[in-house]
Image (spheres, rainbow, N blue to C red):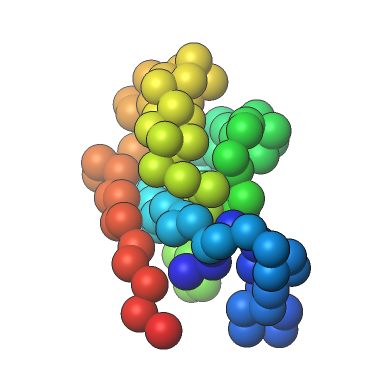
Length: 119
């Protein structure tokens, strides 16, 4: 997991500023699957969420992926500067609106995995 003052460089961490002590970051992976016929609606709502979330304080990474081989399945990979930033994101109006707008179009509930650094 990245820490404050680090960046990814070809998949490896590197120090950006050695003067500040590292801060533990929060990362998560969220999986979404649209009901048949609702893929475009989900993509539109995910796109709005990504654009707004990337502007939030503490958001370091907020990327959307389509799951290979499944045209209706998507993943969001998020990295936040600290747990408080992620918690604030979850309470934001645009996050709440996203959940309300997409819930009827999902084939199953959103799966969220909080990630822990291993290496």
